[in-house]
Length: 312
Image 1 (cartoon, rainbow, N blue to C red):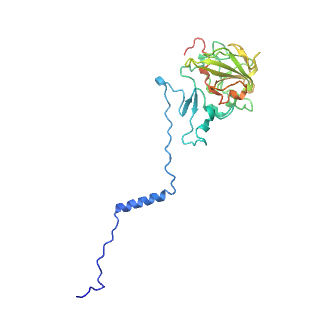
Image 2 (tube, one colour):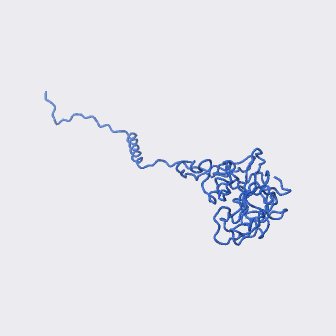
Image 3 (cartoon, rainbow, N blue to C red):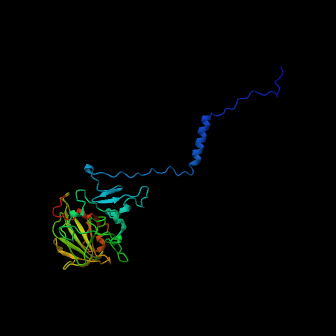
């Protein structure tokens, strides 16, 4: 029998080709592996600010959007996506809820106690430390906002913008009351106040300033007495016998309207601040009066006495 010729090719097994599905999967895996070398990962989900909270019976909540209540104050939240400082959230506020910044720090404007819903909105419902007893004083819009208590005083003369008006342009940071030079500024007995007002500071703050402290038992929390400080700024001079430690009845003269620290515009700066729990003013340091760690700006309408005939 003749052996098969070497030129005759043996039958060979056909090469197995991977299916299109397998090839596609392999290509996808390769692309993902290569792309992952430089891809930092998907961006964090966007933080959507919550809708404004609502109070009972449809009334607006005390704190606005992107703020949270801390006692009676509204504390702003960091901007969405903003990194926290080293130390986390505690580093934002420091120990025991203290806020950064000293007297006049502009960050204080973001933390204030707003008007309580049950208190009247109109200035006509309240009694002020100057003006006729049967009508509220006129209010001014001052050109230089830095003339508020604790802020750097303007370098030159300031002026009112437009005519005096029956309502203040804003209650934030206090109000500017139109006054005649030498007009008497008298002590107030705040709504719910117990005992006499105490003079806790006389000196330079917003020009010549007299600060009085008032212990108030609020109607909504009769078991708690809070201390409020009223700042009376731009006085020409203090009243007779008005020194730190003096006790004043309602109607006693605190001082006389002027333009100290605000040349060119006679007026009274009136501001209310609530003393934080545990804080003290015993050292008479003017910086502590507006230090955010010691006092919080408060809407005057929460504490001013109601005018006779006005009601909640």
